[in-house]
Amino acid sequence: MNGEPARWTPEHLAALVGDAATTAPVIGLPAPPRVLPHDDIWDLWPIQEEDGSTTVVRGRELWIALSAPALGHPEERHDRARLRLLARDADGWTDLGHVFADGASPGSREWSGSTVRRPDGTLSVFYTAAGRRGEARPTFAQTVVEARGRLVTDDGRILLDQAAEHREILRSDGVTYLPADEVEGGPGRIKAFRDPGWFRDPADGREYLLVAASVAASADADHAFMGAVALAAATPGGWSLRPPLLVADGVNHEIERPHVVVHGSSYYLFFCTHRHSFHPPGSAPTGLYGFVAPSLTGPYTPLNGSGLVLGNPAEQPDQAYAWVVLPDLKVVGFVNYRSTGGADPWQAGPAEARAAFGGTIAPVLELILNEDATSAVVPMPTGAGR
Image 1 (cartoon, rainbow, N blue to C red):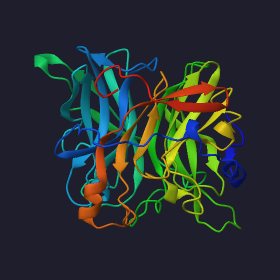
Image 2 (cartoon, rainbow, N blue to C red; image 1 turned 60 degrees about the vertical axis):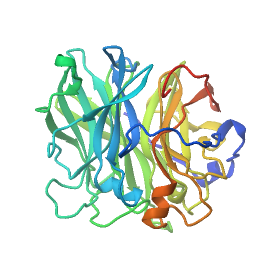
Image 3 (tube, rainbow, N blue to C red; image 1 turned 30 degrees about the vertical axis):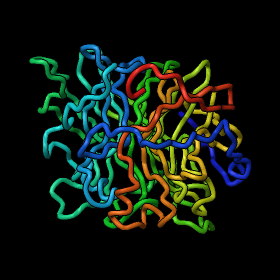
Image 4 (cartoon, rainbow, N blue to C red; image 1 turned 120 degrees about the vertical axis):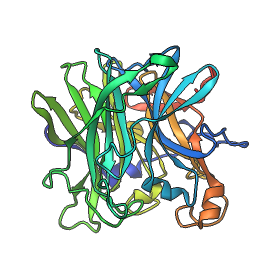
């Protein structure tokens, strides 16, 4: 069991240098093509085998993304989010439809997670159930759910068995991790218990989940709570919450999509966050951040001295988000908001925000890791979408 969590502190952020190695290139025009013409997609991840490789069925990689109809203000998509199954081959992306049957989730909508294919061929889809099924209006309660079902590949179809069982496996304990149960909320204003990232530790063979969480701030802090990376371990009786791996101590109160990549003999903990989630807001860029350790439970030190791995460029501060680093060090995210020189996209009117929103897969980047230092490069094209 890990002891004291690593702490991401203002002193780390003071060392932040937004140089070429840690700044994403501007996503130029024309914008990347939309994968789904009439739906937004964001927060994508590959279905993975237990060794971390991407699942391939009938010559096509299988991915899952959040999706919602491309209507109204883009921020409203979170109130309609569903998991979507996508396939990718040399010809591009194919929409395989919603992952789950209508009303199957215990939540009112489905938020991010991760997915692994088991040796028996079944899928474990770990995701966030947001709100409660049947609620009159969306709330922000969050629990971690596992949907376990067989991948159906007959009659030319690829889909998850629609009778898959959905089971809540984790929720915040209200002690170490604050309850994520707000009725009202919005970006940067809700506590977290979401985005389960599955990981099998090669050191002990055990399964773990990393979860975006919130912990209480110290009594003399001038903010209400702070972000953390929770750890849960698989046990014969279910999943057991452990102390956090990382606490954003006075730095940031909403860190998202935590995941671990083992490279060489080191464990790289990655997560992303918005510029408005820092304390104070805007004190660091929207970006992919990370820490490195000799083992899953630490001790962790910030990459590049500050934790910044890949930030959006200053001229396009919201151009991409929700990055996930794959075992081959490719970095996949989605196109968020293009700057128009007008209002902050979260505060802009529906028409202005919609015109600036991407809602599709961003150009793929690649990381170079050298112990506790990183740099990002644009890989040579190897096929559609990657």
